[in-house]
Amino acid sequence: MGLSVKMAQVRGQWKLQAAAHRNCDTNRYARAHRGSKGPGRMRRRSMSNQPVRIVGDGGPSVVLLAGGAESVSDFFPGLVDELVSNRRCRVVLYDRPGVGSNATPGQLSGASVALHAMLETNGFGPAVLIGQSLGGAAALLLARDYPEDVAGLVLLDPSLVNDVNLARSTERAARAAAFLCRVPLVEKLFDSQFRSYGAKLADRRNLSSDDRSAFAQAAAVDIPKLREAVQGLAEIAQDFRESDLPRVPSAVVTADRKKSSKVFRAHARLAEALGAHLHQWPGAEHAVHLTNPSEVVDVCRQVLGEVDLRT
Image 1: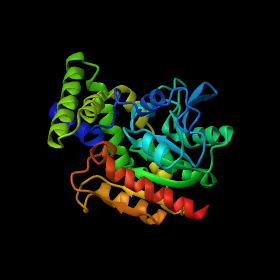
Image 2: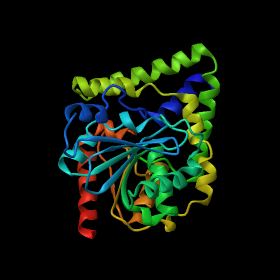
Image 3: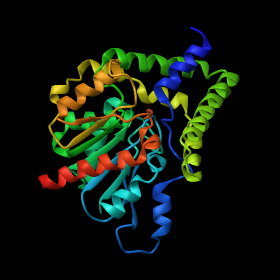
Image 4: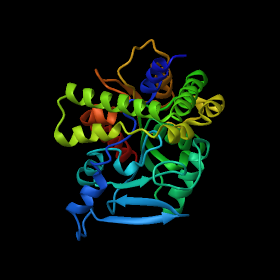
């Protein structure tokens, strides 16, 4: 298969999965409230050498889970401020083993155990989980394995843990891209393609300077690390049954794709199993938290409102 085809596969799987490294919500919020005793105070805890970063002192716990192999600290521009300032939530930012800043080895297959241990150790559960791509997959695995830990779910174009063929395709594309990136010139070409895509998308959407910076940084995909992050996805999908998911306040967001596509149908099955609404907006990309931030905030508000009614 040609290089151009391989690159197209990878772009299709992970368009702008990485986050806004220079637009970090937690750092900005901490600076704005330095010395404050209110809900904006940043507290840091650790569990087995795995950093747990917390914004906000009270209210319901909301766990943010980044896509790809990225650190959650930089991943959701604007969302942390919204959850803390307007919803009075306690936002938990946690990089599970094997992703982001967490140096502890780990794969997606162990995500639910790691998340459960973090929530139980710190007394954060039951929590609302907001996850994009592989972060959404991790949230689904926790909901299946430890339903008592989950008060609600917001799944932003989640990776397909409920379709074996799509999961295999994702793993194959990741392996192929990582293999090609062993050649320095090819690695530079991948990087250039991702950055060019991000710049063009930012231009089309007439983004502010802050969001434009976020999109520019979002293209810095660490492909070898991403390959490790998706390893085992197909095996997980083989054993995943949608009927095992709990009925909790939930929302599933899918990118702007044809309703006849396999990805759309897989997301629709997840929504049906959860008793959730399947959201889709014109022009939404895989990184929907960046392309449609206001809509994502609205969906999070709706789910949190439903959780409030149940408590």
